[in-house]
Image (cartoon, rainbow, N blue to C red; front, side):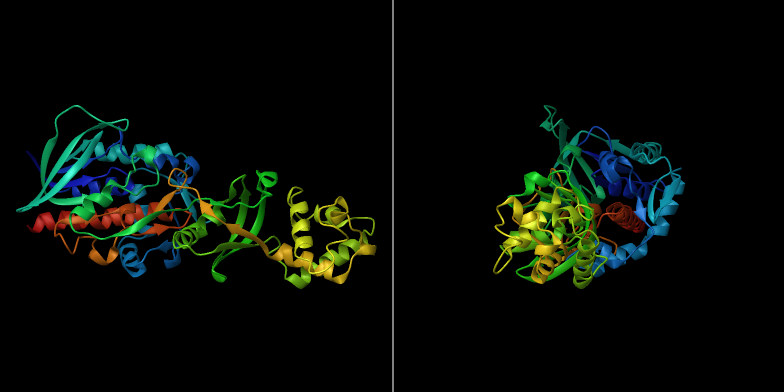
Length: 438
């Protein structure tokens, strides 16, 4: 049975960072991963450009059942520390309005820089295409059982046994199965006595059964989005929407998806209120509509809105305004063509009011969400109340955690990679210090 000071399970960004911290001053470290190469999930971050971190760091950029515990880790190794880490690896960066990318905007170069540093670090071994099947706490350390793993199939080679004084689990969550993320770390942590906050997809698209979605598929427009759960406002985001045949997507939707998905799982009513003109108040939108038709009395509402909203969205908004009418719909039956051809001479004040109200508060009922195959990150994981500020287990001394396996997930903008680097550094240094003292 081969012996190491530290074994790290998971070769993603947090595991690689931890390995670089652990393998110092003669300590022997083994980094194990299920994929054929380490760091593969980095390749899909930032749409292949790898948004490394963000100069804007705020507690509300990180979500957890125990946010103060996440904040302590980020304080110990923050954004400036991450920038120094990049420099030490030869990664030149560029700042795009606070969003930090590699200078060449190639995620592959970031993965290669980490891999090169890991493979050339004295005392650090890498074992790929290997799946950990069990961990047993023994005197003075851990016994780790593993077997060959390739292309999603178990190998025929007999299982192997390893021993370590400290063990660090950095297996990621469930988002990104094709990149080696299968949630196996949750089972390992649970077997060692830890409680797991139920995992759910986060930073993903939302589904709706609205009948007009097929007509809007492919449309993009700016909006402010308010998430309502059982009629109560939960959070608000602003940005570009991307309409799909199954629902709605875009970065702003990703940001609120964590809360929408949790509410759906709890059986609550989830609805989005979409403000298509967030720069204006309802009264100002109503005045703009009045002014527009007064200036161009030959235009219909449809023609007027064509200069404000995407063409495919206009009839949807007009029909919603007609549907909400308590008495006469917009100039006639909402099902007829005339319902969206009203001109100034036939419009009432209530027509303008209803139309402005829909533009400022278009309702979309949410019925579901896209799963882990489309999600960027996992919500939930190892309960942060069960680890120290150095991410060592309070239940099983010598066991450490880093990255997405913990109950911390960031918003879009480089925050999940920042968490990976921060937690990997903090846990890795803590494991190295523990081995040094023992």
